[in-house]
Image (cartoon, rainbow, N blue to C red):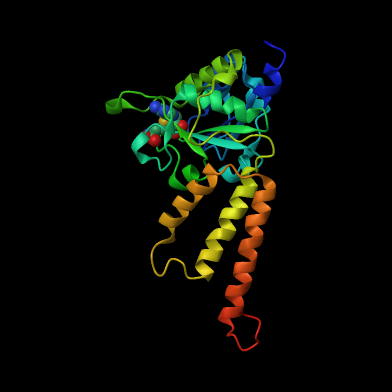
Length: 263
Ligand code: SAH
């Protein structure tokens, strides 16, 4: 392979294909990855299992497909990841500010130094749905012609794998100062963050924060805020402790204050 540290970093770069409809695209994506020195392919609920078309399009990269774990949901596929980046064909649909592929590649590499990083691709027909995009910490958009913006799935994998390759071969230190810097050492995992968000949503319900409004908008803003903070595991535990106490107080308040524990 390349420079001594390259294989170890590349091992932390995971390409996740969600709900792929054409098995041939899985093979083409594997080929695109392998040419760029990437090997960690992960499938989430493919519409059809890899088949002869996959093998034909992989053209020698079938080892990546054979080794690819298959998960039922995106959340499971990225549970251990430090940074999750969603590739999307339509910049206007994204709640998250989309990164330029070059910037995304460089930041992915910085994050990969401290743990697994996922680059997530959607279905050929419909892309990633809103719930799946919600699970991403950042979005990346290949600046295609807005009038014809959607690349073939494997072509998108090729472009973004190429950017990762360039970042792997280049100087990672040049990553520009970012509004949301990539997570560093000790950063919380995706599952830990989702645990916090789940408990936060529950707590907001229990303290009647939304007062009849739809909870999605507040939760989206709060997710963004917490993601910007680059929380580590200890900070997540602290916040969850605060939430647990708030939940306990809300329960006591709900039972009435006659037992004298409130105040
Ligand atoms: N019709 C779908 C396009 C799906 S293309 C839609 O409009 O959302 C399949 C996948 O390839 C997308 O989900 C995305 O992950 C990736 N992709 C395609 N074009 C892209 C682009 N310009 N930038 C980033 N990713 C892109």
